[in-house]
Image (cartoon, rainbow, N blue to C red; front, top):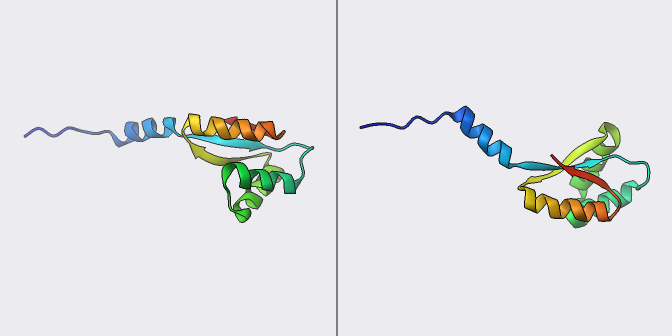
Length: 90
């Protein structure tokens, strides 16, 4: 009986490369309330999660607000940028 060897390191790297993150960046234009409301409406965050992400963006300059496949995140990114927020997919 022959057993197939699976390299868990390479398998993990493959699955991680498919998962992307939607990253929101700090700006000097939008209010905390607007960013929180945008995360609730666009990313379906709970109010507490949206507030925490907004604080991280404010103090750290950016925050990964959602993870998933590129197509799903691209739609969310477009909705955030349409609201005047700065977001990228990384």
